[in-house]
Length: 359
Length: 264
Image (cartoon, rainbow over all chains, first blue to last red; front, side):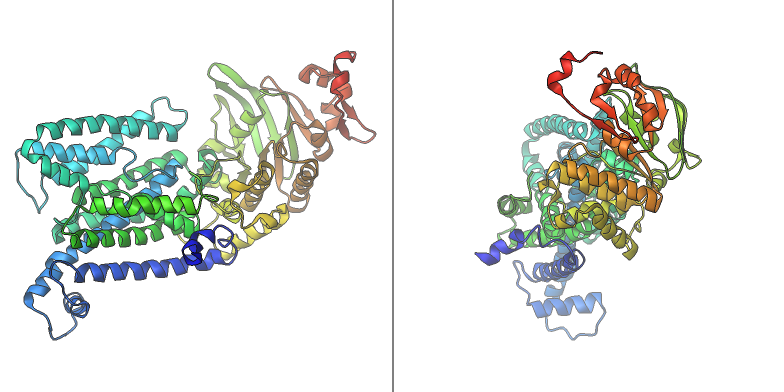
């Protein structure tokens, strides 16, 4: 199977010299093509099939304002513009944001197994959401309910607590962060289990939050979450230099001009913000934030300046694709799809590249 | 210029440095020697601004090092780091390129000048044959050379090294010493290195600073600093193990089998 082995077997020898410059451009072009394909497919496919040409026509007419005579029904236009478009765009933004946050956490903690949820964001958000289900208030402000608010706050609170606790007398801050994250996460998981036990009829709602999904996407929710995720991701990208410095450890980073304490706090805050905003609108969707940065690193190396934007592209494409699969299989939770695709993919990746890629 | 003035560092109630004052002029080549635990690495960390002295001050080019931004320090002083555990596959070229972090454009990254500096450092340290390799697959000695190339690429005017030859074979030890000499004489780079090998220190460095129990006990030319009675006093070893030659060469001649019987 030479073609299948090709991508990974070619590393690391081929990732040197002139390819350092050219390869990222090729990967970026493929990433953009992949994302566009996923977006169009995601908009065109669903329980009501709309021809790709019609989909493009509707998008061109509504988004670009082109004067195209409709060859489609008004219902098709509503489905595309009000249901599918916000949905695929939400998947795109969340996938991209989780991938960037995952890459940042991996670089910051210097741990390839880190993902956006590693420091307690996931368990904090889950507990917040579960508490929201238990509280019998069903008011919505701008389509945001208690569940979104508490999930968002829960995620940020959990990370803040982990960060504060880890700083007490820690000589190895990164290890301390990881272990504290694990401990706090376990505690919050116990709280979640209790909330689920008490939830009665709300159990299904908590469960569907835990598995994640984009079926409740809307333009307004996207309009609130996208700037948060987008700006946090952009700010992380602008600090790529700090992440690069940390490749060799914190002391070396300091010698290379990185103010380690400050940069660590800022990057943690930004990555947590992107993660919290993502999990607030889409629930807990695993693997994208873990796998996307690794795939990109295998292709272009560990330079954060390349890894962050390319992981965003790949994460966005993966998430749109996973949501499409979830819809085609009758609205199963997208978290199930990403796990089923992501876990074996990750294992295959590790096996192929075992020589140059140890965990 | 590096000016260390009255620096005392207390670590968990133990003084690692006691009232150390040292001045290093631009373009000097200085080796710090002394027994284990004498405070050599602590002195380097204080000079690099990584460790704040309990009392006393450190100035780098006229500025207090603890008041400079990390980026400003990194442009004036480069440090060959300890061998790190790399979390991801990283090619040798990518590691050397990290030396340009303090200089590269904050958003666009490396510019042509940075790439040229990386290529020059790779050439100069002689790690060109390792380029495409994953730095994690290299031997300890090779990794040490790659990190040296990174620090050379940083092009900072002052190069600080802690035990730069510890994992190297004899040929590479001499090559690294010659490279440091070349960087010093040809580029005017100030070299500050902690060395254990007194022979290398005396042969390749014009000035030695001898530390013992956190104090500077001698500072000057090798023949003067490595006086036999001082070697016996500080290292607790008979000076005949460290022979001063006709010129100012010092050679370590280890004879472990005769060690116990030698008169003191």
